[in-house]
Image: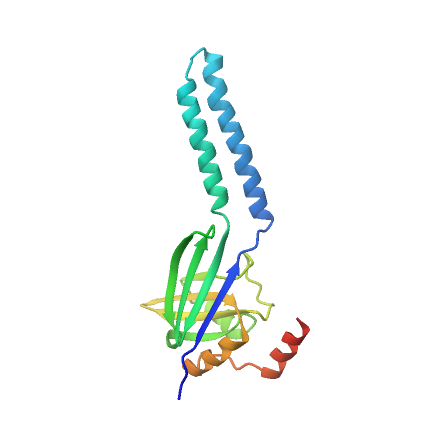
Length: 191
């Protein structure tokens, strides 16, 4: 008798150097814009304090909103053969990204496998749900699902948990890359 399975995983996206450079550039651009908006009317002899004050407040509020929404994490829920992926922005807003069945996957496996390289040539887009901005195919923790959903083929890359493998093999045995169980136990002992 088959048991129902439920696996939930949260992955928070790490900030990299580009994120910090973007934050600093946005703050500097905001300061320059606010200075120009407030100083140009004064030098021209106009008294537009109310207008420039409103523009200043809106600009600073927009910058704060943009910086707060840069923080996001991915939630992957696996219920039996259905996978639902959502993006949680600033720990407040939940954005639905995709939902698919494991049975609709052409191939499932680690990003270091040959099937991942084959899937890269025939995809519409890649949905990266890992903690890194760039996908590292050398990490065994990064796995992919190559999904064929409504005449669109795309790749979902996520961080693998050991209990996911049995679910993948149960619902899509031909599409799942065979994994050496002893090797994964050794990797888990090292962590």
